[in-house]
Length: 353
Image (tube, rainbow, N blue to C red; front, side, top):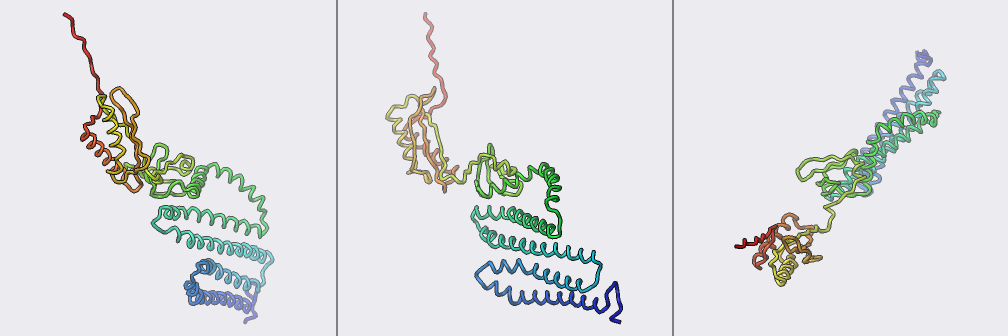
């Protein structure tokens, strides 16, 4: 009975081939169990993360490779037409290269997860920014790995890669023209990642827009302005724009032009400038450095003092400015200094009798 032929092979040969496939399945199960019970606990105990990365990357491709070997041995024991054998061999050349590519893709993904994501987790704005950009880098690297793997697999079975690339080149040009904005946005995301003109959470000014950055994606960057409205910018425009990072400033510069009336005496003017120079000793978070208080101009209705001061980074800008203005108002009133306002004096010549 075992010598009876079915589809050109004896039942005995079919049975042995099936047993080989079943044996390959059993071996993969045993290796998987050994990995979970022995290899994985060992790698988790070590301080080095590289062995964990290697284990996670190689386990599934290794088991798949063992199954490929078992099926290949089982098939090659049987008699088939030459065309079928050539097709199986070609398929295996492709599958072996793709299996190696799968391993490399998993390895790249695991390395990014361990050495990038772990370092990007935290409260620091730069770390949060890195965690937002990691998917962009990961997808790009995985696409590159798979493209190289597929090209090598096709080359391995005799496909003319140069002719294929030439054919794809025409379609690639059309695709590039249609997707040029998307491509520009992706490269814009990489520019933001590498140059880091700002981090998520920073307050910045882009052209005439000012607000806080809430998200940086592959295609766009999102800002929430002071009206709590969400503004979306294409990444390529961000890369080409002039950006002012307000959060990165060490101190905020404030310039005031204070006008006093024309009846102000020189001694009173000097007293006014001394009051202004003494502001840092009275108001918290006003820097004592680079204080400027100069009598700068005669205008139509006022004697102008230019007052320049700096608010320290840890101070609330609006509150500090309010406190400074209140102190100026109080001190000038106590000193009898009068603020000027636009006015005109008319001299009317009396009528002669």
